[in-house]
Structures are given as C-alpha cells and as structure tokens.
Length: 389
Image (cartoon, rainbow, N blue to C red; front, side, top):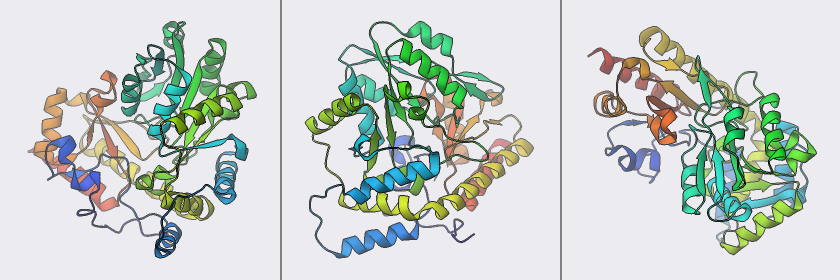
C-alpha cells in the first residue's frame, strides 16, 4: 500500500469529540473509543497540502462556490457512480444533517408525517421532531443477520399527511447497500403516493467488496423528480469538521424550495477550507480511497473472524457499505443496561449503543472500523478478556 493506515495518530488534545469528549456519551473518558463516525486516519496528503497552502494566504473571507467546485462534484459522481449530474442541479449545505433539517422544512409543514426506516441514524429523529413533524417508523426486517425493507408496512403507514421518506443509502447502521430492485420498488411506492424522498447518500463512496451503490435519482426520471440527494466528502475523506456538503435534485421545483429555505435560515455560505478540501478530495483522492476501502474491509474481516472463533454468542452483520459494523450481542442474554455496563465498565471499549438508533437496535452495538488495525485488535482483546473473566 502507498498509504500507511496502520500508523496510530494521537488525537487527544485536539478537542475531537471521539477521543477528547467521549464522556459526553459514555460518562467516562478511559475507554477505547470506536463510536463517532469519523476516521482515525489522516485525510489524503493532497487535501492536507491544499488546505495548508490556502491557510498560508492568511485571509479567510467570504468564499464563493466556483465553477471548478461544481465540476469536481459532477466529475466525481460520474466516475464513481455513473450518475450524470448537471451543475444547475446542485445546491449546498453545511452538512448532510443540516440538509435533512432544511429539506424537511422545505417540503412539509408542522404536523406532517416523515418516515424513517429503523434502526437508523438517530439525528433523523431529532430533525423530524425539532421541526414539528410527526415521526413515522417503518422498521427494516431482519432475518439471519440480513436486513431488508418492509415495503408492505411502508404502504400501510402512508396517509394523506405523509410527505417525506428519509432514505439512508447505504444504510447506517445496518450496513446494507440497497439493490436497484429494492430501490425501484421503494421509488414506485413514493411516486404512487406522492411522497418526496430525501436520500442521504453520505456513505455512498464507502461501498465494500463487490457491492455497488445505486444513486436513488438514477432509477428513473420520474423518481429523480421527487428525490433530493445529499452527498459529502466528509465520511469518504475524513473531512467532517470542514462543513461542506452537496444537495442535488434534477427537479428545479424541489431544488428551488430547498435553496430558498437554506437561504432563509442563513446557512448558504461555504467554509473557506471546506470548498478547497472538497475539490481536492474529489479531484485527487481516488487512489487513497481505493486503498482505504481495502483496509477497512480487512478490519471488518479480522473482527468478524475473531468473534466467530472466540465469542460465538455474538453475531456480526455482514458489512456491504459504510465503515460501521453492526454487532448483535443478544445471544449473550444481557439486557441493554447490562451490555453497556459490560462493555464500558468491564471491557473498556466505547462501542455505540444500538438502542439509540431505534428500539430495533436493542442488544446491538455499532462499531467504527475506520482506525488502525492495532486498535481493532486491542478492542477484540479487551472484549474477550472481559467476557472470560
């Protein structure tokens, strides 16, 4: 490998949430943190160099999104996903979570219903509730450790007040990369029932093995016309702190409604370093990403095989996309509170409690594998030693 993902970089003392402020989530800071979805790897060297060069200019004023900014997004989506996007389809957000909040406000009214497919990324719950909308849950079906959409349940739960479904694709936390057939069936339901799709595709570049991400908007012109897609380089290249995301729709109506709401809440400006990082990552980060994906899949295989051999009570969900493993601890017989006590107080590993993703996540833990292999090995060592003691 050209890039050294084995190198352990000290992150303490940088005010990073994952390492310096784990006590906010766990109530303690003496854990091996494998929770918040950012990486313990340096961003691509080309990105670091571009940010340093821009920083040396010394003036960090208001920054426009240039033609080259949009061209980098268009080129990336074409090369990586076969999605031919036009510049005029692209709007902005400080981040995907912000985009979801803004889109909910743009496409619905207080009291309207918004559907999510649980267990799912928990900021969706907050986005719906804080904007005064009704949260409707369409739980995924789980069988033999694999999750699928329950489309019959989805149809039953749609009524005249239902305006939006938030699609997580690839899905966080269960790690599914939805197939074209699955997405097409979902799209048909949304078209027939006049439901808009907010498609969170922030993990779309982090697809493992032979799986392939299908952008929701590529299913058909009709589905594209009801879809607002959110993408960002933040997960892909470890740039979450630079606040730059792209929001895309082929529908001029949807994009205008979204962009007007973006402006009304004062979130339309770009981060001076975020624009530089996005362009550089999309233009020059592809080789780094290919090696990253190989390394993360190696981390997953190590953890999966270790637990299968040493901790058979635990089952690891197959990981198709994202760098977040979904581990089923229900076979241990522990309650949610007992499991947290075991992991946080005895094993001293900071896995993320699955119940915060919805009731369907009770007994599960989400584990961040975007870290040097030695940290994955250490977490497994702590886990098995605590179980056997």
